[in-house]
Image (cartoon, rainbow, N blue to C red):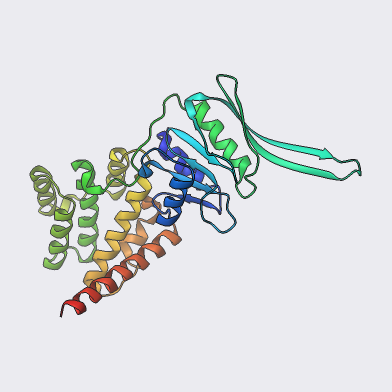
Length: 300
């Protein structure tokens, strides 16, 4: 079973529109939610925001972390509930009929706590409350402990074994391009190694891997190492980061920012990235290059 943070992240991806999931939460929406919900934890622990505002301000709705859910209704104060306090969660549909025989249907989330309180979220009409009730019910039935995890922890702060596996995948791509790691590819790998701040021992392991390219490790095994070493909830973010580095390094060698190269396409299923994520990654690389060019021209 995946950790609580990864589980919530995966399930929130099934909520559809109006749900923002880290690391793809717009900074303005995140700031709005933190302020409006009076969120007193670390903003980096927020896994997702279910937005109940018409224009997408994220000032109403639900915030979920690995420890708690916080909801904010229009004109109401935010309500914070820790998962360990919850006894049950139900999606409720009430149908009433007025004296003219006209029916009115209302849908809401009803949370009953272990100390007997009943908490209702009645005005979240833009949020898929039925799906959210299903997610929260699974959280309290399938997990016994809960914890928040920094969802935006920089890769350079993660374990050496994760970073070594990450770099080995880059080496595999370089080798598969033409059967060797040439000087330009070697320079890119060394630059990435420096950015990831590997220890002396980890640098030695990568250099040894570069000198024994006849024994390349399967990409699926290396991705497995990344997933097993990743902080709870960060696997997907690391996959996207890896794909970005693969595209970026390939583009620096070919002068073309594209995802249409053999190594990436062959391993798309292993990396588990969507077409949209790849497209956004390409756009980010293009924008980074434009920004760098603008800085260089400014300095001339």
